[in-house]
Amino acid sequence: MVTSNVGASTVPHRSSIGRVVTASVIGTSLEWYDLFIYGSAAALVFPKLFFPQDNPATALLLSLASYGVAFVARPLGAIVFGHFGDLIGRKNILIITLVTMGCGTFLVGLLPTYSVAGIAAPIALVTLRLVQGLALGGEWGGAALMVNEYDAEGKRRGLLGSLVQTASPIGLLTANGVFALMTQVATPDAILNGIWRVPFLLSALLVIIGYFIRRDLTETPLFEEVERSERAASAPLVEVVRTARRQLLLGIGSRIGSDCIFFVFTFFLLVYLPRLGVPSAVGLEAILAAAIAQIIGIPLSGALSDRIGRRPVLIGGAATTIIWAYVFFMLLHTKVPALIILASFVGMFFHAGMWGPLGSFLPEMFETRVRCTGASLSFQLAGLLGNALIPIVATQLVIKFDSPWPVAVYLTFWLVVMIACVAAVPETVHANLANIGVRSKRQQRRP
Image (cartoon, rainbow, N blue to C red; front, side, top):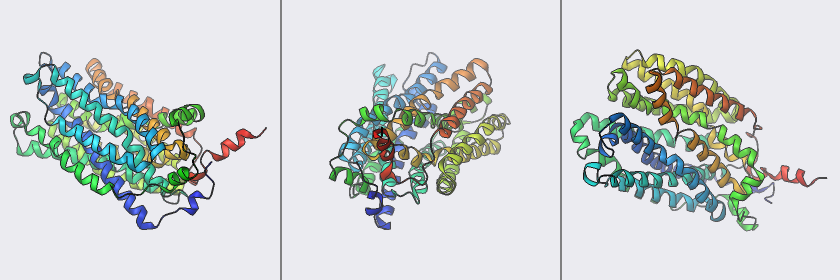
């Protein structure tokens, strides 16, 4: 078992932490760019390019379903890459996932459309989306653990973990910025005739940049100690299911609500605003504002969680977002672009309270031997139940009821679940990661 002095004896120099954080944030931002560029395309161009046009509404739903496919693959990626992350180290997984994601995204930019290849086109599109999901399923855990395990004693772990979480809005900002630029400089026909491929093809360059940033990273001190003591878990998934089921389930419940909110406050705008007669360009501008709000709010929430605890920040973010979910739709129905942008900006600033602390909250729930598998799997299974379903659920609710309020109620349900799950987890802000899981096992051996 990892001894209690590991965290103190292997604390690296400040410059090492800075290098690890920089490499993790930049590399993960590139992977989120790859993921989100697909999300924008799934709402704006893929329904017309990769699916039959007999029924436009069905084409849109199929396109949004293909967006959700990645979230089905992400738990599998968490299992596979989490397994090897606990066996061979966090750094190696970061390299593999980056290259896998980049190749999958680049190939999307080369695909023939439905008019050229027929049914083979959407099949190939969904296959590559699965590849993206597998890659991101392993990416988040590796990046989050790298920064958390370099600050095992936890003095700034909330802030450092939240910086990894900023990779999501950075990727979102970049991806939608590219699409917003395309809508400004190219006609809709030009975009459909080939300009849409450019953001996907750019991924090849981004992968090369990310690879050179990450290749010289060193392994985390906590994992190196596990290797030296020959205590690495031989079957991390089995151990997580056997010894940490409660943590796994609470971790899943702690994230689903934030995933649902993320989609509705961002990509859902591209689906819902046209129903109100508002141009999609307004939705893209709102998404850019939302990304900026997150970039501001996530580090603030992470730093605040170091001062007052993870649970108060997570619960506060969920509670304020429940209220804003209803205000959000009221502002959308004004059809005033400035108010629509404000709705998304404020909503995602509140969302940052739920998202920022997760970068440390989930890793702090599992011991070092199975931390990569446990944290990754809880994070990605929540994405399956949240992000994979919300595009279809929200769209269907609006179509059936011709009203946004059922969507707001659906969001409220999952946010209440999140509050309950977070409240059931002991506060871990001051925990030493080297000791996580040690005390409970010792107690289990007592008569």
